Amino acid sequence: MTELRTPPAARVHEIDVVRGFALAGILVANIGFFSDPGYAMGGSMPIADGPVATAITAFVLTKFYIIFSFLFGYSFTLQMRSAERAGASVRARTLRRCLGLFVIGLLHGILLWIGDILTLYALLGLILLAMRNVRPKTAVVTGSVIVGVLTLLMAALALLSILFPEGEPAAADPAAATRALALATGGPLDVLTLQLELYPPIVAMVWLFQGPMALAMFLFGLAAGKVRLFEEPERWSRLLPRVQWAGFGVGVPGGILLALTAGDAETETAAVAINHVTSILLAAAYVATLLRVVRRFPAAGRALAPAGRVAASNYVGQSVLACLVFTGYGLALAGKLSPIAVMGVALVIYTVLLWLSALWLRHHRYGPVEYVLRRLTNWR
Image (tube, helix red, strand yellow):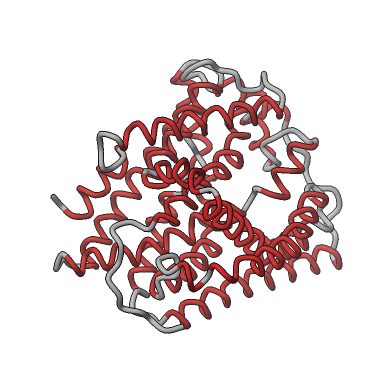
């Protein structure tokens, strides 16, 4: 891969479209906790067992944060070019942006969504800053090594669990789940109490288990941004069918395997190891399919792009609306809706935010969260 130096466009439409699409997967993956936080107390799927949980595990979990992480790395190259054109320090701008992301993520995690990813992105952004001058090939190789090591570690753990079984895993505490649900549907202070209790261990899990894979995707995105992959569609459009065949052909079986082994101590770890690779392929197939659809039906891209332009505001907005529906901040419907009804709520939230994003951008250049980050980044 060679780095190209051509004038960049003001915005990359494809990035906005893909980011807007990925928001839907992020919402589906997260909303289960809001709908019944008691499941999180046992570390299990945040949706009751059944076809909805199986479908989410197979086709959604781990796939969409991979897309988001890739796009973060790509967008970092756009921000570097913007700083260079303005004659500003890339280092100073990135440090301020990461600080802003961390503070926003901390508030988001404590007040709204304990599984917040922004603090992790802020910390990994510092690593990306340190590696900003690596060649695209080096970034791809480094990211591949990270994925390979993660896969081997999980495979080793799976082998150890087979050779030295520990017996039945400890059952979840029903009383703890009941208490979590009661707090979530109590008053605002009850909700905040639950948030403060769960946020530290959950954020530690997010950093530990999602951090390495997110860093690998950052590096892949960095490499793609350096060669301006999305900015030159003629370079990749002919490859999309191959990406789809490989991604769906390998990624779908990997996702189904993960769903079928969920909760089985002897096989789940092995499925997770396989999923480290297959989830990347399936995420790539999703993106390839979306790009082909948008090329044929441009209206679909125009519908998704506004949300992608204000993705950070949408990410926080999803949490706000989910809290208003499910927690004591609002209607307190947690534990009262079936899994399919929860997916219906997710569809309504996503549709509302698509509409609000388009409406907002008719009168503003940036979303509320993006505006704050831009002020901090540019320091003006």
